[in-house]
Figure 1: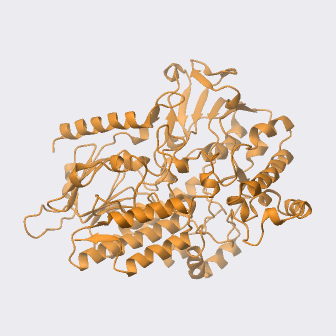
Figure 2: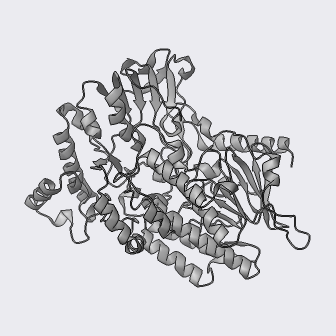
Figure 3: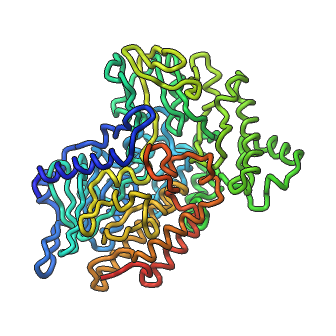
Length: 594
């Protein structure tokens, strides 16, 4: 296939994607520059790839497995595939490893899972030797950790950086995949593993007049590696999701003035982060075998012994069964934690309303200006609808004289001009604009690659009405193509590292089964896939995730035109693992092996 034909095909696909997704309230939603073309594999690099001869008339394979993405999933995939005797290469569009923790360098970027649990458990030597410094690790420490993993296991020799995958095409006669890069290079493999991440495609509104702005415009999820000068600047921060919440206090410390443009208030809880107690770290390392087992036996993949913020209270504690006096006592005892200390608030909107009042009370206690409470405490959607945010002194930042909240519900952004941001409420002069406006979650990275299965069908067309998978791992019509933390798996609702390890090990065992039993291909049966899709949707019904008032990226509500389908699996990590292992133990029941 020529470079010209690849480019023409991608151009047609982009046109159909625009027609499907529609327009943003701000104008066209733009893919961020970080998604676009990077230098691909050189011919010299391609020649250096290991080659596996295929018997008969089938084309020669460059590798057994192509892995797309060098975040935590891609790194562990490469290591585990090597252990199983597969020849693999990882293609990564960035010029460094670490995925999320390579790209997201904004001030205050930090994980919401404790460091002692947001770490690999596949190697006891690794988990014993690495020393964490904080309860909740910051971006720089996580990037260093994943670089250490790449070096310790000699992974870099099979990772091709600055290589963006443009297309992956299944060749049915040979049962192989041809993976093509933006540079026009191609790699043929038997299997493809998409380790592209759930939150890896940044999105921002295209605001009229951006090109006129005389200052600097940056995006939180594509923060320049060289940093951004914030000191003494008037700064507009647009967006109050996790990135906006985490960066607000840090930017406020150094800015002349910070204007926070908020469309929707956020539920966020204090992390109480601090230095990691050496004794806690040492004791955890002694108990790691037990802890790793417990992680896979808890719905969210985190235990309560390392400082994790547990969102659901004990089953026996129901807020509707508590008296007002008992609720008040819990509020005084737990403070911020009181609003999430009950089991019924995630399945009963009346219970959720009471918990929301508790949350509002804590917001009011924290803010100096009582008029801000109505603007910063959510009132029109339930706790548990969106991914909970964990912060460090977010609400306290609004007590500073140099921080102003702009509630866009009272008048939205109209344009950007030479000197700042024009809203229906007035003009705000700024020197720097930071967009913290989220991601095209779960499916975004997959749809930006032309993935074509049997009969040339595009994955984005196969999923036009929402994702269709079996266990979030494979899709009918796309043999030997696997997704790590794909839609309809726990992924973003659980500890991502635990989910990654389970998926990598499950996929590895499946590939070995195919190889060792003389099969060529593996894909779901239509019946098994539909049963899983139905089950995945059924377990979300009645939860706050699918409440009518809930408009989250879990259901694609932040992307105009995206089908409203709850994408993660809410049945819990423990249940999911049990079901996935039962499928494997039954000889991969529900999958067609040929």
